[in-house]
Amino acid sequence: MHPLRYLWAAVALVALVVATDLINVLSDQEIVDLALLSQPERLEPEGEFLAPFLIERVPGTEGNRQVQRFILDKARELGWFVETDSFTQDTPIGSIDFTNIIVTKHPQAPVRLVLAAHFDSKLFDNDVFIGATDSAVPCALLFDLAFSLDTFLDQYPDPYLTVQLVFFDGEESFRDGGYADFIWGSKHLAAYWEQPPLFGRAGNTTLTRPPLQRIDLMVLLDLIGAPNPSFQDYFGNTSGYFQALAGLEQRLNRLFLVSTHRSFFNTKTKFRGSILDDHVPFIQRNVPVLHLIPHPFPAVWHKPSDNADALDMLVIHDVAVLMRIFVASYLRAHPAPKPSSRAMSPRLV
Ligand SMILES: *[C@@H]1O[C@H](CO)[C@@H](O)[C@H](O)[C@H]1NC(C)=O
Ligand SMILES: *[C@@H]1O[C@H](CO)[C@@H](O)[C@H](O)[C@H]1NC(C)=O
Ligand SMILES: [Zn+2]
Image 1 (cartoon, rainbow, N blue to C red):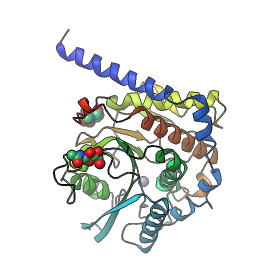
Image 2 (image 1 turned 90 degrees about the horizontal axis):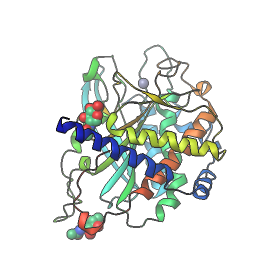
Image 3 (image 1 turned 30 degrees about the vertical axis):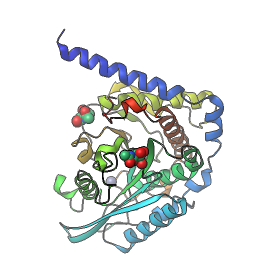
Image 4 (image 1 turned 90 degrees about the vertical axis):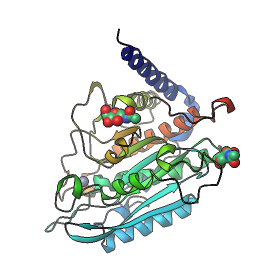
């Protein structure tokens, strides 16, 4: 056998161990308690977390700035650490201001589990486009996660790993001009995060590392909220996490904590092909990514009908519970490494 074969066998084994760990790290009682934190009305079209996103929010417009203010206000209400990444670029429709917003529970924690979604909506010249699934619901899910898990996260006052939310601006193209006219925000943030921070604590190699190297895993949510999503196993190197989500979904099902009984995860076949989205600039820089986007895309994709009427509240509720359980399991499975292993070698997944 070629030596590389052993390496891949080892990688596959590690992925399997990670998946099993994550699926079983919480007790049934803990899962029930976390699921009971749901307040589904907050994720309804008129709800606290979703309604503010259901407006046109094209980069550089007042609607976009209004949504930025909402994200900043909510993040401050949470009491998490807020950063912005603002920049101006020439686009096919002229010079546009963009702002990515980053919200972190414990900024001093060396390593981050990043949960991301884009808050801008696509420009259509002759149609009103709200993008309820693209990506208003994913943004609302990030806030639902943060507010519902905040107390759980407080149980880890000085954690090794923390939760970081990223709200990307400018995911959508203006004139469908290919890669150059696309994912403006994530391209900027990924490049910016290659640099060491301006205000890292001198002498502390943990905190002066470029933020990109502090990402343990990036989970990117997109096009969520329509009925019958089918999430695919996109990347072999994060397949363990994909399987863990599917396994946690099964546990929730057995405990009667989800409402839809059809699995959202296609665990049978690996996905072939590629999807261009905000993860691309991060994948290119070797960040492990779990892409939570259904394939096929919702039928309303990039149509004016991608509005509140397209949403399936049971699906949204189930994804919210599942994400909460996944993140809680992830935190529990990643206690601080023993002092001897404190050298932050990237983990294989
Ligand atoms: C560096 O920062 C981390 C995270 O806040 C902290 O745990 C560690 O003790 C610091 N190390 C030094 C040498 O100050
Ligand atoms: C993970 O897999 C993707 C797709 O196969 C690849 O592009 C990426 O470079 C891999 N990342 C790492 C850290 O190996
Ligand atoms: Zn879109």
